[in-house]
Image 1 (spheres, rainbow, N blue to C red):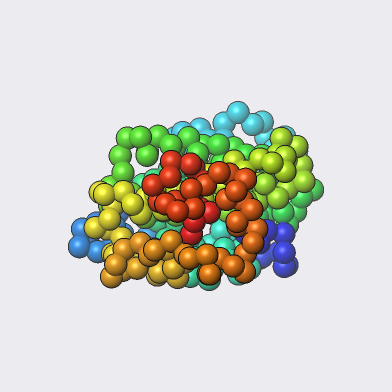
Image 2: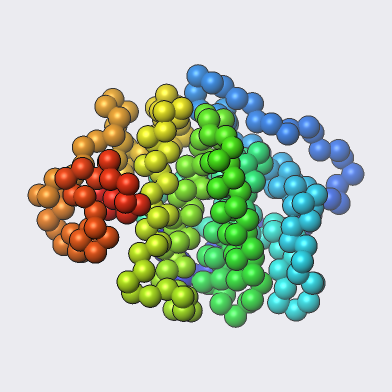
Length: 283
């Protein structure tokens, strides 16, 4: 995650205006049109419509609700800025242009019906803005609030319902959580983190686990994430998951072998190793 590098991205004009001022009733779009033969969303929801739905949800949920509107505080009037920044920034922050394109194109639409992704998207945007403007406290407050809500919602969804309808949103949230975990690990003010703490690697386990979930496997070849899966060389549309890379392929990265030893990973059969670090260190 390339936070803090490059120039500050410009925000869309009028991005802080609230849709509540409009007298026209919003159409009922509580659900996105689904096409079971393809990916869940037929096409992205119009940007301003997605923003309006997200603001309506946050107002009904009273989020954020516990922060007073004082200097430096984070309030709902800041949400449009986070929303627009996530979509509009041209800076490369995902490490993959294809991954970033999918996230910026589809996350707003998918967030309308998947609140865990809504909060993940806002947390990521707030973290990026915090890295660009560290003197503004509201971004740190927003990042912490939405990251916590995203983790809670993501965990609850995994326990309650995982299917093709929310698969793409779960994958999107996994990517955002992974980048946020790496960013938080890299920050100097994370005093609780120590050099021997590899807990941040658990965030890298989500994508392979979801890909291996039986109920989702038929969906993978029709997912909006298929180009990214193939790009990472961890998935093939023809054969499914690719074999674990051989030691020959891993030779240029000796630090990976050090991490495997430190984390006690079964190098011979990582896919069947219950160690939480086995899969992310194998691929």
